Length: 209
Image (tube, rainbow, N blue to C red):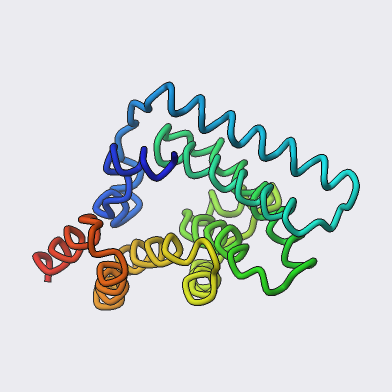
């Protein structure tokens, strides 16, 4: 549901995120209300089931993964569709907390590194005074550490590897490393030849060189 809405609205086209100014100036989209309600209901149900399992076993791997995913999906929706940055940061912090618990139970759950990597990169990209304030709230950030964690998911993730590669491509565009961004986009295009997003972004990068 989330990615169908991303596709409909053109959310993942990386020109929105080439720098902080472009990201801050991104427009607030008008979501599909029926899909938004279905999306929220699905996450509510997943969290209800996960919390029931955690009440019986606080180290249940699947439940911790579900809580990590639900908080991460809420963060993505809040930031990229609703443009609610503070709400997204709150969900990102929750996702990071669940991911850290999950990795303590199962260090080989490489998908969990996407949540911690996104948090590290986002907070590490903030201006120093804002980053300091966010750290007071218990969220630290380091852009390069975030990229390394995203790479773990991109290389070894079971479910989220393609999304991690998309996020890495966007990160490399932001870091002005367009050759690495292009390399990731070409690999994604080869893996998903029917998805037009990657070809468009490759052409956009090539036109800027």
